[in-house]
Amino acid sequence: AELARACARVRAAQLRQCPGISEAGLRAAIRRWSHLEAVDLCALPSVADATVLQVVSSCHAVRAVDASMCAHLTDGTLALIAAGLPQLQRLDCFGAPQLRAPHVASGTLLRLCLSGCSALRLPRVQCPKLADLRMANCRELRGAAVAGLAQGCPALARADLVGCARLAFAEAEAP
Image (cartoon, rainbow, N blue to C red; front, side, top):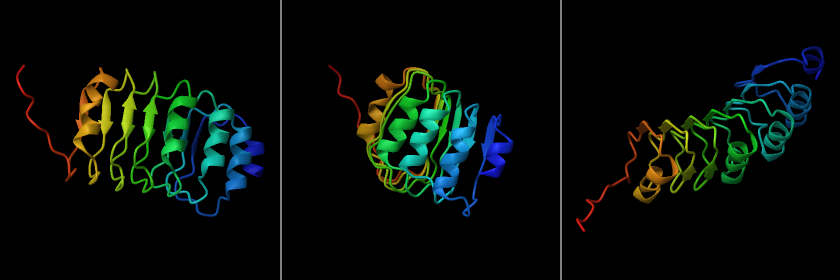
C-alpha cells in the first residue's frame, strides 16, 4: 500500500509471481493507479474476480493485461476484461486452467493469447480488429470454435493452433 501511495502515477505494473501480495492489497494499489496502461498479474494467487473488477472500474487507459497462469480466472472474468477496458489491445491468459468457453468481445483487441489453457473447449471470439490469436496446446479445443473465427475476427492474420489434439477440420461440401 505504501508503494501505491508513493507512486500514484504508475503507467505499467509488473507484479508477476509475487505471492506475498494479498488480494486486498492489490485492489488498494490498483485503485490508486488509475493511469495504468499495462498490468502484469501473471501467476498471482490473489487475482480473483474482485481484483479484475477493480482494474476494469479504475483503470480505463489499460491497453495490455497479462493474467497468465491465474488459477482463479474464469470465463466470466475474461469476458469482463475484454468488454470493460475500452482501450485494450493485448490480452494474455496463458495457462489459465478454469477457462472453458469464454466469450471475448472487444472492438479494440489486436492480440489474444489463450495458449496452454488445458480446459479451453469452445471459446467465442468476436473482435473485429484481432490480428493475432494464440491458442496453442489447448488440448480440448474443438473445430466449432475455430470455425466461428472467420466471422468474429475478420482481420485475423495469425492463428497459432499448434498442439490442439482434438482439433479437426472437415472438408466443406460443394453447393
